[in-house]
Amino acid sequence: MLDGGCEGAAGLAVYGAETVDASAPASARAALLADDVPGRLVRKDPTLWGPEAQDEAAIRLGWVDTFRRSRELLPQLAELKAELGDLDHVVLAGMGGSSLAPEVITRTLGKPLTVLDTTDPGQVRAALGDRLLRSVVVVASKSGSTVETDSHRRAYWQAFLDAGLTEAEAGRHFVIVTDPGSPLAKTAAEMGAFVLLADPDVGGRYSALTAFGLVPAALAGVDVAELLDQAEALAAALGGDRDNPGLALGAALGAAATTGRDKVALVSDGTGIDGLGDWIEQLIAESTGKSGVGILPVVVEDPGSPGATGPDVLTVTYGGGLPAGAVPGGGVRAQLAVNGPLGAQFLTWEYATAVAGVVLGIDPFNQPNVTESKENTNRLLGSGLPVESPTFVDAGIEGYWSPGAGQQDAPVPGDLAGALRLLLAGLGEDGYLAVMAYLDRFADAKAGQVRPGLAAASGRPVTFGWGPRFLHSTGQYHKGGPQLGSFLQITGDVVDDLPVPGKPYTFGQLQAAQAAGDRQALAERDRPVLRLHLTDRAAGVPRLLDVVRGLAEVSEEGRP
Image (cartoon, rainbow, N blue to C red; front, side, top):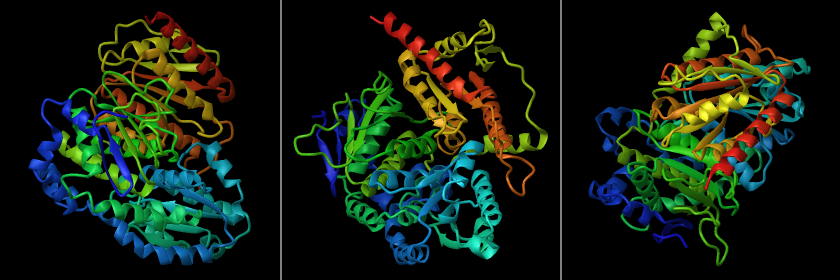
């Protein structure tokens, strides 16, 4: 049993929060209660995060009770599913908060959903070639201007026309989810697509229980009313001083972050919720990583993987209901465990993140640094990519080293192992490494194995994100959070590129521009960036993994 007792409501329980809060010099929870934060939050008080955040918060607190308004979608979803009964392959084109929640929902509940959240031409081409004429494409974008999602829409539209459908027939294959009045809503009308409007008072990363989370999940066969029921059952507890799991979790996250444990390892305990860590990661990173402060989420593959613990790490396990006699935490040396139904999990983590924002003194609803990489990408698409010469070439892997502050006089790495050692040596006692892979997350899935290997080699927190989807989540933390990061970017040659219909560039060019634009944003902050370009992906990924394993083995041998 975790120290710190249990606080729960509506089947969701948080274990260990009291002990985490008590470890701080002053109780974060006591301060929150003294300021009536629980009551003010459920009343949607926009002044909770200070005067600079007030205007943004005033239009971003709809998530507090959006599960009630979302019930209005249920009859529409039933009608739409019946209307599209012959289209049994659901594709979701969306990024960040528009895709991560429905992916968790469908994975957890065992329903098929193809999530397209990439600009990698191989991954896009594979999606286009999968049961095209049986596909319904959910195009989800709050702003309606997300470049990746617009590119997916264009590619599918052209594919349907090339398959012999008329424009009217092609329009039937699209369901558009967006905010009222967005550019995408207008485009949807021109396409003859189905349109479901989302709650405009909810930001993307808080949108799990809005149309963004519910529409694709419902089309895939999920009973989404159950998720709303779970959230509503919990909501009654969120205004209270006691038996309030959201308050307990938020106070613990804030107390830990302000007393040296500002990295949060997210570990599934294996009790039935699949992939929630990725959704929590984007919620916490994008909400808290700004103004030089923040909480860094680290998604850990399983309880036995490296990187789940550390002196500056708060270890949190998550899962569904615990079986009789089970110990919270799934055997991990965790400080916190969160268990309960998925709909309640979404609302609890949203509430807790907003509460942690109060403790940290930041606005949890803005994302001031997200646009930097986007602007760099657009500029590079217009001007062309910079000409770069590799620092070294190692077995078909080209390495490009950009030193960080204080590293300009360090020896230039001459091979892959040396470059990785140099990168890891710069982490120090409080740094972290972010691995950013602009590859195909299915065909190149083994690239994800570098995360535990580098965590074992460095003894430091290591995150892993597929590009460009991480730009819509952890990308904010990388640029706006504490400047403690070192960055490993992995790119790969494109063998068979794919045009973006109606645009003067290809998916491969867009992917390359996004990677280059993000490198520029990081280098401008004097952060070390090592780019590894795989001239042959099939050979490059195993070569990289072999070198990482070797570094991990040497590191293990050197530890007492």
